[in-house]
Image 1 (tube, rainbow, N blue to C red):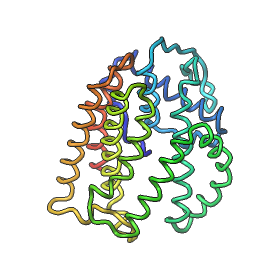
Image 2 (cartoon, rainbow, N blue to C red):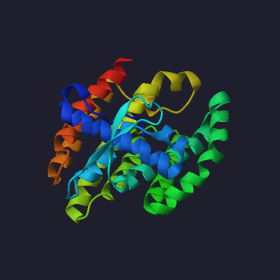
Image 3 (cartoon, rainbow, N blue to C red):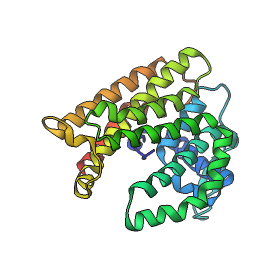
Length: 275
């Protein structure tokens, strides 16, 4: 994931921000504990959202305890008392990181390619552990990479088809959080729309660099005003994601998740596209 699913922090109440930050810090700690210190490199607000959503659908209280950041001992942090609630999101982060490294080895050149080659053996063991814990996510991500590579190799000109693998891997991963069939359907739709949002925004942000380097970018086939098209499609994805979210029986963290979907996504893409 790319860090595009994040809150509009200015619109969060202080208590809500502390919880949001606490889940982020807890996920960082969980990654380090389960998969090693270097696994914290994959930490992003996308996986924080996944963790929040996972916990929001479950009964029971979510308690935090005070602690200190391992990288900055002077900084106080709040951590979840039950770190096991982050097992799925941390495994998903680890699996995605590993396949990103594998993909960089195939696609990148020079320093980036060398960095990926050096990183791969460092994360192989952690990847195996995460894949063993959540084999479904391992299968989803590996299929996603294969499908995306095939579309790019064929120089796919359809924006909808190019976005499909990312949307599908998110849909399948989010569906794992549901207990009932109705919840799974709503979560799948939510994940699909967010996956499409991520793909389109990432393609837009990478457009100039990809054109210069000759890398694949489906937006070069967009008709009319490219930015106008992307913005309209991002709004469609956000609106559809919101409809799916409204169906869910959210038991906690609703103000934070609502902030992310109704305000954070729009704020993020405007900020990223302005660059």
